[in-house]
Length: 349
Figure 1 (cartoon, rainbow, N blue to C red):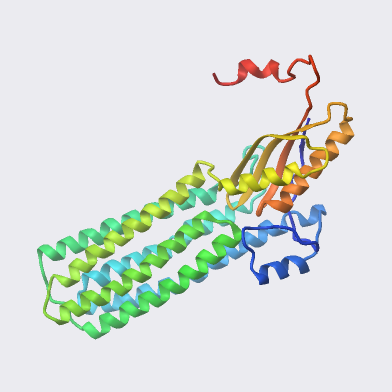
Figure 2: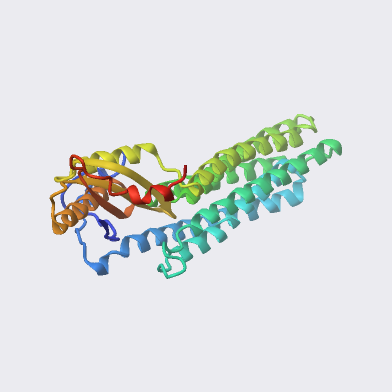
């Protein structure tokens, strides 16, 4: 037996575990929000998450765009290659809002007969674009720094360069905190990856101060060496972001979520055992597929009720889970043939 009840898990007035370590504000909001299983309410949480993601992207675009423009003006008058690399990286970080924004818009579209799971995976593709942008900015920063090492030039307007570095740090750190917080709250790996990118941009902006200080002391190689250090920092961000996004593309989930789901299912009355359980991300939403063992003498209605209770327990226990496909298997009777035997030749060897 297989049952599917694709409803969104709205918050409800009775407390239960919902997330790793929810803070007081989140718990209070969860307790005060109404519980609804009405069809009209099922899509609202997903739309709210996408709207929050879009808002985070466009606010980030505005802040980083303004930061990059201010730094670009300083680059034009100072000739600092370290600040140039930081500026280009900030501009690239701002522009990553475009593919992510497209992904969030696509994610709102309803499933159809061609895309039966909807368009949520567009967000994961956007994460890949972000990774490529980070890689391109690393290559450019490294190329500019090496070129300046081979052809040293003095850096002028050093106090202005220092101020531009501080502006870059402040803008990037604010954007990083904002993106990471919103990305984790709505379950967006791409947005979290972009936030990590912005955070390292902030520290690389501070590194520009070192180049300015070295240049002030007459060491011409200081500026391009800092440019190379910025390239190395970008490469580290690239590694972390790529690992997170590629894990999501390969349907990786936190094993703790699987453990939590299994514990919740085992507590459902009527469930004798938990069979295969799978979780996968589709954009910033989770789906589950699992088999449960029930009494072999249970009626279809009784098994159906257990399947519904199982999905309900999962929706309460696993954050951002929106639907579960529950298959009920009868407990084996002595001498009974395995009912799945007819499928054995279809399974991989």
